[in-house]
Length: 268
Image (cartoon, rainbow, N blue to C red):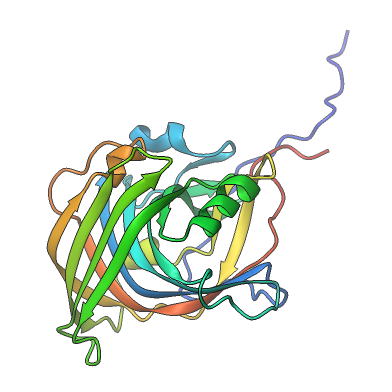
């Protein structure tokens, strides 16, 4: 007897989309708006096999030269807003530090996957965990700057210590000195920062949430201090040695669009 006709059409993986310094799609009707300010990006190279099992269904590690990366990104969230409503000045503004991985799905969409997001406001943490199943953690946090009027030569320090749900006491202390403005980012710097969406499980389904923002204004930075156990607390191998990339940005305004179809799931 002939084999039964397949009821679903398999999704054939396509090559990853090109890395572009500008958002590939404009978001005219945003689901969320926010600004990311005073960011420091720390990155370590990792073996893709060490992180593949931590990514959502339908995604694999995004690689550059056979290597992927784990990022520790500290910044100031500013005026989170819904739809086209004005951003909230107090509850929507707070320090945040996230641990992230780099992903690509079977449609070729490159993105990031958040393993943890420490934030200093309890309400956004509760909404993020309960409403979106995001791994938000309530932490005691601060950001201190010195000399940012000139940007180059300024120092920026970030501290965090977890409150709930834990592991209680996990945290970070990061200090950088801002260096020269980057006119032409390297291939690696583009790979780590030009990410136009996130992969995650939204409303119980594996989805892709696109974002758009202006080009990053990037500076190279000197790492003065880094004491952290957030990467290990996120289920990843603890970083060994100095980061392979240390970057700073004054920040950008960002928009998130509606979740796209499930990442890599066969369609009827």
